[in-house]
Image (cartoon, rainbow, N blue to C red; front, side, top):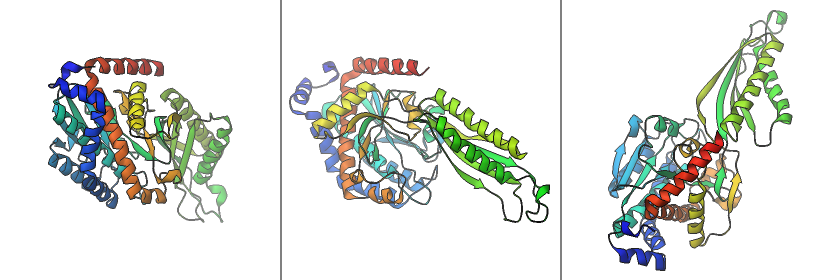
Length: 411
């Protein structure tokens, strides 16, 4: 397929006969395994929050520039975003780096490993382009603020995906799924306002906003009996008053609402708001609810990319995985995946025994075993990118046709 795209036809024959793609991609990554480990460790050692990933941004952009990529720092006028490119023409395949951390528990989502995988895959594809003279572009895109900040959504709004034909990334987890379904997610806050009074001397003069907040929380807990198994709602109290002897005038909560699709998400969000309103009515309070940030859309994994990834994974000796499965987590990659064809495999680290977003997972994200598994997965990712480049416009047309069908089914 796409033989005319090679400057050297003998190279194409060698690729078909003896696993040339795997040799070139894995060889390039193996050559840089120590520098890639150091890159990951540097990011892991300096956890930075949404849009504050200054150290990670410098580490990644300096590294990619030194390896021969053309790097756009502060891409799309976002201080900690970047774009690194090598090659020319179409297809333009994109691999994603994430590098923000979590408050207090550092890289407990393993974004340092995601960055390592994205950079490593980019190196592997670059080596293949250099070796064969194949036409095409590899883009490594640095996307800040995945943990609630919606960095990819901001990048979409500023045109970051213009000219990109497909995007892929990998994510560490306690399991293996090539085509995981992630939920849509919306955040919202609610603030109840009552009337302060002395809680012992004149409680009848007060209107208790904390009672309203507790009642709202209870209403939603009771709602769970009628919620679909795939729906998720969770919250924290962000204000419950100042002193026990003052009836709270203000109380507030911060909620995450998740569902498999945007339409189901809106249905669930409306039910949650009804619970807020009922609590306000019952306690005599007023309420104000507001959205927080942008909605994370559900991830749509492209099955053609999924099958290509699976074939390459098996070629590298991995057979213990699920091809598809439902997850109740969310990611702003979902928004990318509804703009261009995408894939977001999850790969197992920590022996499958440690949950993400927990302090122990931060430790797992810095082990030699996780580093080695990440480079194996990065090799698979790079090989899949090469497959798309080799397939040329014909394969790209098939991938996009499937993407259009998936998008139509969501409407």
